[in-house]
Image 1 (tube, one colour):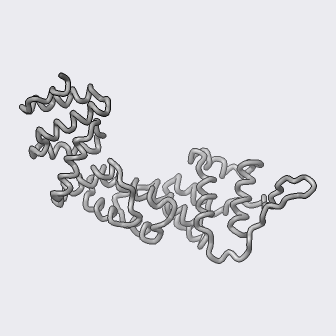
Image 2: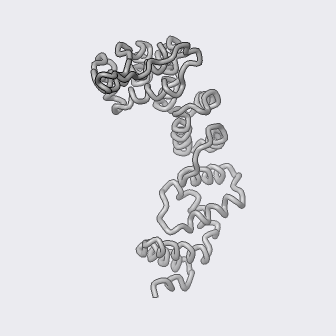
Image 3: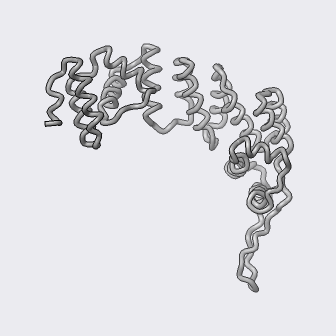
Length: 267
């Protein structure tokens, strides 16, 4: 069946009939209603290369001037996919692998592998790296990489963190990723002068930072990197951002470190 026809059939069932079997309904509830949209998106993005027919197109009736889509409505997810989703919920890796093998080149097989890696995190990053190397452009690869990086930091697997970070896809820079990267470099003894400078400027922003930045900030303080100028810069930024209470806290913190003149912005 052409991929577009599969998508149309799924949409028809979800939006109009809502009559999938009991297994699919239970799984849809368990995965917070995201199962079918994910299936549809996966099939749409990763269509089989050997699709050899064009999908039906909408037609306009001259008499009614209304669109009458020509869609197939008898499609249901392959039993192997449903079995694989149930196996993921139970943590049964053997059954998941069997379901993936049964699906062969169906794009839903890729989704099952992704979902199993996402929902069954382990200390072994090799399967995740192998998946990302094989599917760097997969629609959910960035999510898998990001969640695995968070897990590695929590488990203090800093070498594995850096190894995974270097694998495609490249993640969009954000506060968490920056602070985690500095922490990993700090723990592995690879923190560079540029990273220290970047962390200092990050600390000097006019807002309270999240706890995942605490490791690098504590290191900066312990190594006298938080200079009077950085305190003044952060206090000024806090006042400009309309956060005087945080600025007041910084004044007290700086004064306790014998930095004088920090209350100038309150006069």
